[in-house]
Length: 141
View 1 (cartoon, rainbow, N blue to C red):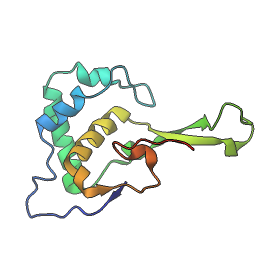
View 2 (view 1 turned 120 degrees about the horizontal axis):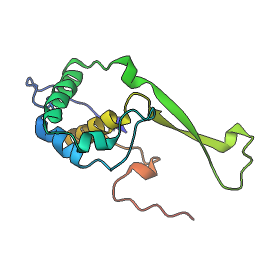
View 3 (view 1 turned 30 degrees about the vertical axis):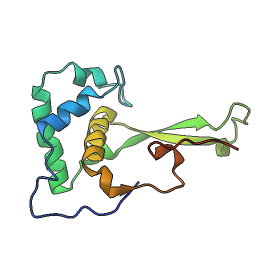
C-alpha cells in the first residue's frame, strides 16, 4: 500500500489514538494468536482490563505524533513457505517468505487496525496486489 499523503491540519486529532480506538481493535483480534517469539498472545490483550487500552493509547499516540518507532519493534523473523506442493524443496527459488514481527505482532496488529481505520481513505493499493484489495474476487485462468 502506498500512502498518498497525511497532511498535518494544525491539530493533533488525526494523530491521537484514543482508548476506544484501542478497545475496538483489541476486540477484533483473533483468539490464541501469538507473536514470533511466543511471548505474547492475543489472549493477553482480549482478557486484559480496559486499563490496558489507556496505556496503549498513550504509547501509540506518542509513536504517531513523534514519528519514531523503537528499533526492537522493527525486527522481524522471515519464515520460508514453499510455493507449491510439487516443487523442488532444495531450490531456494521455490520459496517465498513471510515476515513475522519478532517483538510482538499483537502490538503491530492492533496498531495496523487503528491505522487502517483512520487512514484507509488516504491509502491506495497497486493493482498488482490482488490479495490486498477489498471486495476483489481473484479468479485464475
